[in-house]
Image (cartoon, rainbow, N blue to C red):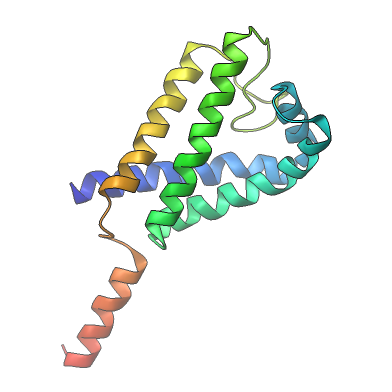
Length: 155
């Protein structure tokens, strides 16, 4: 189980880091993607575009490093739940927009469809698995504690 949680942690963490980079470098493009969903007031899209990618990169980096795994997994699970809800909303009302998940609408891989629903649903469940099952194996704090014990015992 510990290898499965590690793999899930690395996958979700890497995806969040990867997804945030283009958004951080192009916040105006990401703000357009946020506005396209028509869920939040347009005036808020700039604030979301400026802050959300930094939260994504931090949560992803924490999962990869194994630092504060439960809070980071709670954060990624919550974000993925919101992302999934936004995609379901857009799909259900027939919005013809790009996902904007891994970049701006102009660089996205395609219009929202069943693929996006399945992908985000799977990612949500993977993140929830981390939240519920991860016990901190292969985490930076665990490695530091092990190393400290080695030094203290002279091993």
